[in-house]
Length: 281
Ligand code: AMP
Image 1 (cartoon, protein in one colour):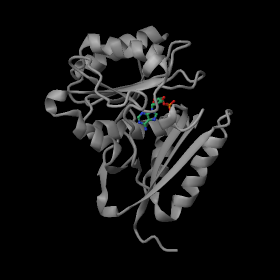
Image 2 (tube, protein in one colour):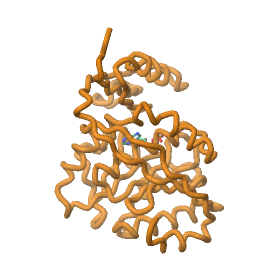
Image 3 (tube, helix red, strand yellow):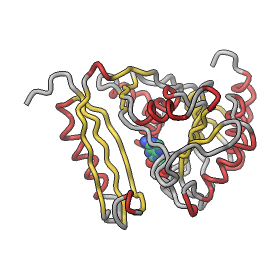
């Protein structure tokens, strides 16, 4: 069959205890935007991921949607830099400063970290998507507190995927999570977020990042404190419009990241002031 130049959005979500909308607990989710000829392989790969989590899911949904190439926008990849710290507390302080630089009030950043520690969802559960915070007031803006907002309909452009893998490998960023997180960060910033902060649900994975409009994807290898819940937060400035526009762009618009990131040399935490003072990042 010929798909012409059409793409498919392929999405997966898995839960235990029933579907998410019936109160099931979120296990895993992932999204791709691939040329039609790759849709089958991408669907199978996401299904395999859902079935190999170590916990048998009670519910898995794979959704495919055909997308015309004219509906897809090309977006830039954020720069990547690693900041080396001894412990999560130092990384968190650095993150608060990076967030402040783009207009996230210190109290709001600290509230978000409290949520990331204890679980951002109702009753301290982890969410299926990300929390959405007003950068100024800290008000939670996501409509559904269990689900949050979820970046989807995005991927690397097929012709640059290999170059992205090579660029990240050359920089020692070998974990597939980095590649996936970078595309979420690219979409969040493009959609209008001032910043994002994330650390994983995976108890053994301590790295995380802050993505900001000013410095791109700033990675901290030791970010998540032991025992912390996982999660993700987007910060927006509602003065720039209602969050509906951000959410529509984040969840519905189709984008492909158009090139590999510029990876800047890693810096120790002591050099953070230089990064913050950098006029031309
Ligand atoms: P992960 O790094 O995959 O463990 O994800 C950490 C947390 O980020 C998850 O618990 C979700 O709450 C959230 N998350 C994962 N993928 C997305 C996405 N595409 N959009 C928004 N939030 C996400």
